[in-house]
Image: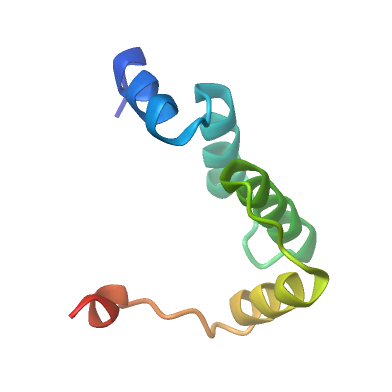
Length: 81
């Protein structure tokens, strides 16, 4: 499924994240091994930069531990009731 430039323009306008950054992250997620610590660090770093929210070493370690040990919830619907 391809997305039009107007779609990316809308996203960039709302988030200040450009098309190339979005596509780069999508590529990392699609092609990366999400059980690899280095891939996870890259994704966390990219998301941190994209959102402008710093992630401490301690937070990064907790996120990586959760992903590597399958502690990430798969059903997030329960959090939005």
